[in-house]
Length: 332
Ligand SMILES: NC(=O)c1ccc[n+]([C@@H]2O[C@H](COP(=O)([O-])OP(=O)(O)OC[C@H]3O[C@@H](n4cnc5c(N)ncnc54)[C@H](OP(=O)(O)O)[C@@H]3O)[C@@H](O)[C@H]2O)c1
Image 1 (spheres, rainbow, N blue to C red):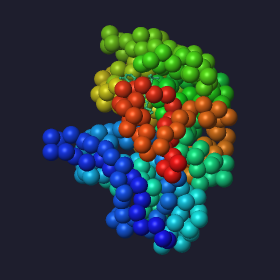
Image 2 (cartoon, rainbow, N blue to C red; image 1 turned 90 degrees about the vertical axis):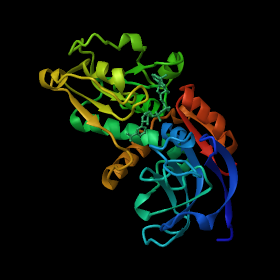
Image 3 (tube, protein in one colour; image 1 turned 30 degrees about the vertical axis):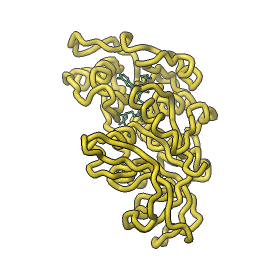
């Protein structure tokens, strides 16, 4: 390997306890120890990357730091027998981009146990259109379908215009579910129906704060990305023996619930943790994304930026003013 330096986005803490971002020339040698050095071709931007890039110490404890919880690229060197130079791989989750230098740099070095061989049904670019958000959507839909929610059932998706939500809407619609999308911020009806939502509702159509333990039963399943009063209103609207998943806290991490959806309707609530997902389930979810759940309008969800465009894209995520998935082309 001849290259000794690479370009990456570095977040630095300033004396005024602010966080400044700049593209810097970095040393490959200074990357953390690990089995596999990957030349990153694409990354993507997730809600957590915005938190890491803006100094959220719950995500990243020490700065300077290169964020990027997603990376797809080509193995450059490997001390593991599992991978060899030239292999196309996906690295997401674990500590990548949190306290380990992440995919917003042209190289990463990581343990072999974090690395997933790219499934044949996806290109590296497509794998990053999914990224952690799509992978989390797949874990959520797997939970619901393993539980017994099936095609033609009515399913609600919240935060629908976002990354996890947009992939969940698309995947569920492609698999034959009747999808209702909750759209909270900008009016994104045209986009949401274009990616498969049969109905689009707004917060006033869902949120109910009177404290009534059960609401009219409207959906068999729900993929929730928002938490707070969205989750608590949705779970009170799930039909008997239905189920919902919880993966995010965009609205709030607080939930105030009674036991009644669980004991009077037999509703189940599944937590989703993509970061520590065991490898067999991880491979199964990537297999579904590359196969049966790979919807034909994947590109409709994607916008692409270079490293120099990450700053503006993070602002859009911070304000909720973006649609779908933003991928980062590291070498363009
Ligand atoms: N547990 C896990 O493993 C895991 C993995 C990935 C992500 N997550 C979490 O899942 C959540 C969503 O992630 P993401 O990557 O999809 O984020 P995202 O792309 O930023 O999407 C969030 C969406 O939420 C809605 N929204 C934003 N601000 C809102 C507000 N103030 N009130 C109501 N709705 C608002 C918007 O969609 P609408 O306008 O359509 O409502 C927005 O597009 C985050 O909390 C993230 O941390 C968890």
